[in-house]
Amino acid sequence: MKQDYRNNYDELAKGEHRDSHTHRDGTYHHKHRIGHKHGEGFSIDFYAYTSKIRHWNPTFKVSLSVLILILCIVLDNPYVSVVVIIAMAYLTIVKGELPIHEYLSILTIPIVFILLGTFTIAIDFSKQPMGQYNMYLGFCYVFTSQAKLKEVVFLILKVFAAISALQMMTLSTPSSEIIYELRKAHVPKLIIELMNIIYRYIFILMDVYTKMKNSAESRQGYCDFKTSCYTFGSIASNMLVISLKKANSYYDAMEARCYDGDLIFLEEDKKIETTQIVAAVAFIFFLILLWGFTR
Amino acid sequence: MRKPILKVKDLYYVYGNGKSALDGVSVDIYEGEKIAVIGSNGSGKSTFFLNMNGVFTPEQGKIIYRGTVVNKKNLKELRKNIGIVFQDADNQIIASTVRAEVGFGPMNLKLPKEEVLQRVEEALAYMNISDFKDRPPHYLSGGEKKRVSIAGIIAMKSEIIIFDEPTAALDPLNALMLEEVLAKLGSEGKTMLISTHDVDFAYRWAERVLVFCQGKIIADGTPLEIFQNRSILKQANLKQPTMLEVYELLVEKHLLEDTKAYPKSTQEFKKMLEKQVSFLGVLA
Image (cartoon, rainbow over all chains, first blue to last red):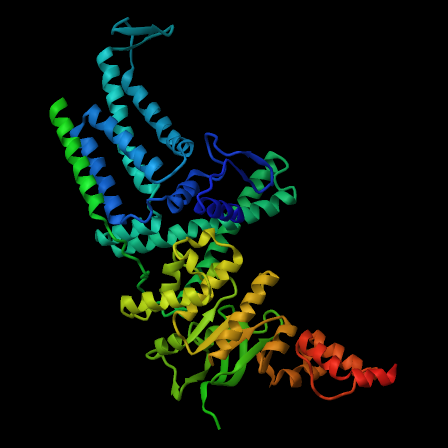
């Protein structure tokens, strides 16, 4: 699995696009389905590293996306939301060179949540037929109105714009840089250190889990439901033991390199270009103007 | 007489579960030595290394670094000067980019940032991994991870570098690369300790061999002395290096004149055979 990602990394780093990739079992099949095999978290992280706008100053990217997120919510204007959605997609797909179907595939998860969440706002139940549109379900009426639907569409746009602003950040800024920004924003040191270690540990545990799962699978550990449950439990408890062991050896390795209580990493300051700031400021002014004219 | 960099005196270490891991270990390490530490699994090699670095505190015994006895106060000085490359790179790599990982040690030394950056660049170039300094460790292969973990120690510029089973889990190409790095470090006069199960490697690389067995050093000498001593090999459950075994067999069968010039690699062996062609000719 790791090898697989590494190959992809090399491919993407060379600017080649992968339409299909080899899975562990060695068969080729189309990757761009809804719902990823390896879990979305892994993929998002992976896209951040291959993004072409990764070299942009992380402070700039993080503050831009947070500022736009706030604007989306504060201005509460559908035109602003639409412009933000388009602009963020432009940044991620055109500037960041993320394939469009990958982008859409990543967005499907929040879209599903947004639709499920807003659906309940749009409809209402009653004993009597009422509202502009209603439907009889046998025991009660489901009804809605044009105003309600409009409100829901605007809400969807707003949420979606906010999400795409954050998505722009996560798809172009590796976690380590985001954590670095949080450190600069004076988030407590303990939380920063935990974030750093947890981030690194996720991949180690996933690796360990995959190895254990494969070895269990090769010994018929998942042949029926009962065995699967048993295997899963054994793996889970074994993971705990291994985590403790790994934590110990990590600590030894850190101590051997003069660790004395403060987890500090070397971070690189990336240059910020004036054109980027100008463009960002212009964009934000444009959003505010747009809001002013369409109020 | 040369002065030892590191003196280890009567070291005893007992694990939390009461199992004794080191049972009176004494050894002097001199500048520029290339030492192979051999011994079966669980013979105390790794524990010895962690004690030398001050990660484990010994039950009894002293570690003397350049004339000063190591205690809690100057522990950092010891750690700064003795770097360990751990067996499993996955247990060593803590940061989420290669650059941050290599910079972890120098950052802990509280060096100014420019100095850290310069050291990191140097170490990356040294290990030939400058290309992926921005990559996260989870998108690296095993060999690349090993190189990152070695670069992390090189960046600390420690006097003694300890490698805990560096060739384990490396493919032949990466193992070759590792030997090149070791040769390069050796030519710069770095003191190195390597624990290994590969007796052929120990025989060809080391100038001095320490044999561990059940928490004790049972032998300390040149590779030739150690590997010709069959009782020690038997006690430590080791086998003879192939090259030495072949040489001795050839001498025993009178196919080769015993010149006491023990070849360490196949190249050396070939050269020796070419020299002795006349002798072989007489036999034919």
